Figure 1 (cartoon, helix red, strand yellow):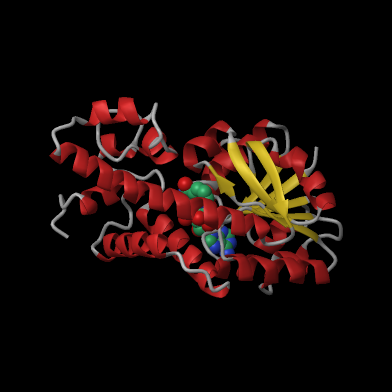
Figure 2: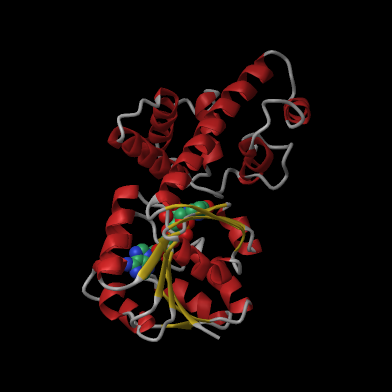
Length: 298
Ligand code: NAD
């Protein structure tokens, strides 16, 4: 079976790499945090002392790191993938980053003779654990066909959305909608409560009505209606406020790049910024309900 070098074994990378092990791949992981490397070893993976060592024996490289700056370092740094991967190694970046950096890394990979795709995911940690992620893949059709067997071990929906960078563009638009939905939902729940409705009734009707959305069904921001939602565990993330702010800001800089006005997203981004500025970065993004409804005093 092929060997995969998995760079970035955090909240998402660890469960994703576990599913690759389950599917029979040899997985050699690398993370800057030793504890994250150790937990991969505890489930049957191997770790390397550096990115260079991990990719030197790999057929496929997958990266899952926080931002564009991290992705550029992983691929273009002196110890990085492009310097040390073997010719023919397939490169997959699943991090959520800005389109500009994604396209720049892709071009550098192509110039170095590699085939690369950007393949960000939707679905968060539970879907990473269950192997039911949605992959939005940017790259050539040939590259997409080559990554399908590997991505299928971690996801159930794989869509080729366009050329290099288009995976990131798709992901940014998707998360912009999710971020706005949560704010819209928070406003509606606040109003509903003040008009005398209880949350369970709102949930029961809206999930069958035209206001239904993923934010309500999976991340309902009030305790009760959705037992698995972070609101029932003091808003432990889940998908953190800091991550949502990052994605909302990516949407705003992408919108500016193509001279597109997105006032509703801008206003939602400002709210997530306020939450982070007031110390709620680590809370789940659904905690925004508490700011919208005035419960935090912020
Ligand atoms: P995380 O912070 O839990 O994990 C990122 C890991 O990358 C960390 O363990 C960090 O040590 C490691 N890292 C950073 N630079 C590195 C380097 N140079 N070499 C090796 N390791 C390095 O973040 P996460 O939640 O796993 O998210 C990763 C990416 O996936 C982000 O871009 C995020 O936006 C995206 N994403 C996250 C979720 C989610 O629900 N958490 C959902 C979809 C997409």
